[in-house]
Image (cartoon, rainbow, N blue to C red; front, top):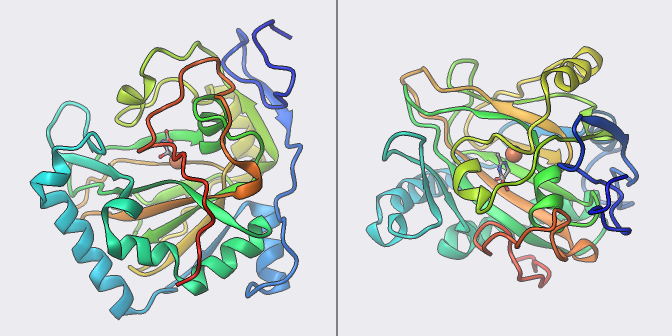
Length: 298
Ligand code: 6CS
Ligand code: FE
């Protein structure tokens, strides 16, 4: 193993000349009881994700939709480095740290129904590692290439183990045509160590188009041969919970309808970020939070 791999690193990446599959060394489900049924827990454990259509009521999702549009139109927000633009244009792709920029999103993060599920999956108290709105505008919203979030959060942000998940809330319908999120079922049980050295200030590039920390074609082919590809599409208000190591991505939006999703990344307080495992300076806190206080239900 190359010299720069830390002795406490069970998931090395970006150190070898070739990509490797390493087995997951962590549980998928950490909790015991909670609102999810045994069947739902088994689905999440086996496939790495759980889709709950129309989880939020219309009167919960409408204010969030409006809030997402307000954030994008507010010059005080668009002037911040939290606002990321599409490659090659000024169109807004994402706004990060929305759980601190928006009281409405802060409220959603603490929503009791959501939090009980997250705590069941991760086994107890959690904090928010990252949050963002991805706008994927009509006609020209660009793709997010295949990746495991955990690879980046481990190497660039210092999350030690796989004990985090993403909550994706559909703020618009996600359909076959507007660039819905796609996942590779069961890929969360394999860690794909990636090739290439992380460039300085990688996030400035990667949040627009990611080139490092993405799997090579052969690895992807093998994962998809095993698990296939699923696109859990559904109306606004639907939510997707997915494991931090699940391979996922999404295509461009060629349709006339935007695809807007809100993402909240919850991490166990027992898995708080340490020094990044990639021997690089940690990313700014608007991408990788340093506030480890547990989220309290509202
Ligand atoms: O770099 C990150 O943390 C992120 N990038 C992607 C493509 N997904 C998760 C996360 O927002
Ligand atoms: Fe991602």
